Length: 443
Image (cartoon, rainbow, N blue to C red; front, side):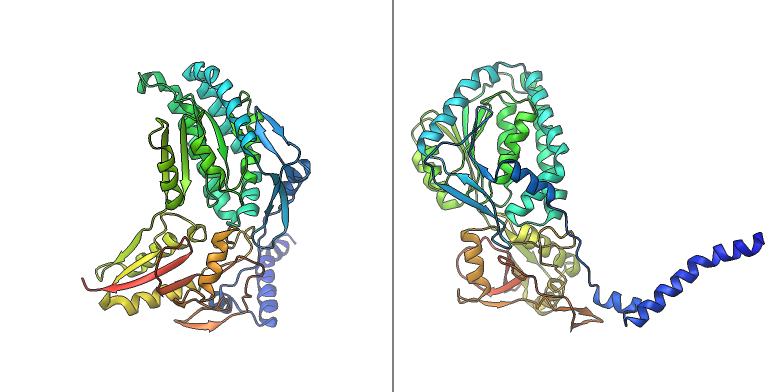
């Protein structure tokens, strides 16, 4: 009896496997066909925690000044909405010059005491911020994905972990201040303006080094992507950061000029477009105040016939379509040697057909939605051909099968601000889009 029972136990897994294969054949989906299509089901990340956090603030945010939420009366509001659907996530009060003055004054009051802390004490505050960011990793990832439109894979695996690492790194630099930066002194109060493509990560790049060196900050997030900044403000209180060290106000793009002209700001740190950066530099010139600018740029991908073409294709794809192409250093210009142009472009087209585009909270998607505002409007013009360019883009109902393009059941993504990866043959001017421009030449 024991041997019979043992035989039944050993046979059970094989019986279950045969049953599953039989059911698969009945549905006309063999294992081979699955490898041909490589279709995925959806794997959405739950957004309940993010919506609960928004509800806890009644989906309305004011300013973060002196570790308190300030909601002055009579101010205009601006919406924060999901790029994919336009669904309203929250409303934010728009700052006036008076509100910025209030935030700068709070930072000025807090700066002497913050700079007077020992390097070890400042380091402990930064370590606390890093640990609390780690604690809220999932909430930050989902909020960033909802508000910005980038994929949960990017926010969960890149943006939030890198932001945490920046605070850990600068906590170490704060502790080494006396030893490694002897003779240096804090500047004072720093005004900081960040863009929409990496809202939380840019915030970390700006705030962490400023705090480590004994400065206090007044930060203005981008008009369309503010929610992660408000969540960070809440984390500052939870982590025990002293009042006035970090202050956050929201406003439109014109607020940058007021920051640049503010006489009680000792420095302005700006990340954004080249045109705005030049204007701010002219405005600050001659005042004695400091400024750092991180402006737009373009990076070419150059491919010669001696290259490993398959590896070059992966480099091109990662370089231009990471973060929906919304990266100032995206490799959006392709310079390819003439004698390999046809072969290489065919490989690029085949690779583009495998890029999954869709809901930003879907963990199987590699390209999400565009951020809101002018960037989305420009992308619409480019992808619909209104700019006069010659383009090619794969149909999202295509996939690779045995060396050729064949049809698949994969559906087009629904919603707004979602475009197929596109290659442009000729286009004048500059873009900040997920597009690869192609040029050919001789070696």
